[in-house]
Image (cartoon, rainbow, N blue to C red; front, side):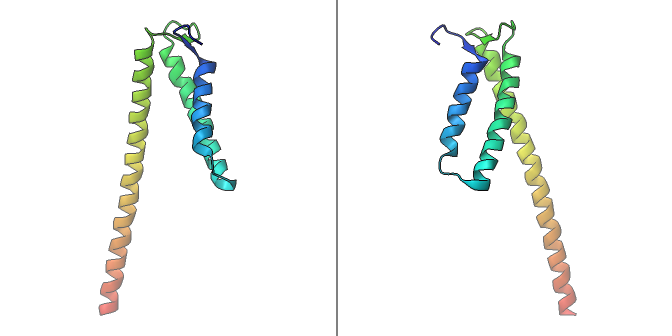
Length: 110
């Protein structure tokens, strides 16, 4: 609406439109994975909205918008940290794999 406020319903409609756009062209298991991500994202966005709605009137207004942006930024930072942790684990697995491969080559040379 054009009242300078956004309701949770309006916010989630925007999220739905974004995910609908992103999911075009996917089918089968890929579409199911995108839909699962979308559902998780909506739950996450509900939490962000709740944190931003400082006066608990079920609307985010111009005064609360900075809180919403901070909550979204914090969520992005947390997601980035999780991806970094995952990448570090993957890197460790590759290092172990390389060490195993090197060890196998040494045994072949003997």
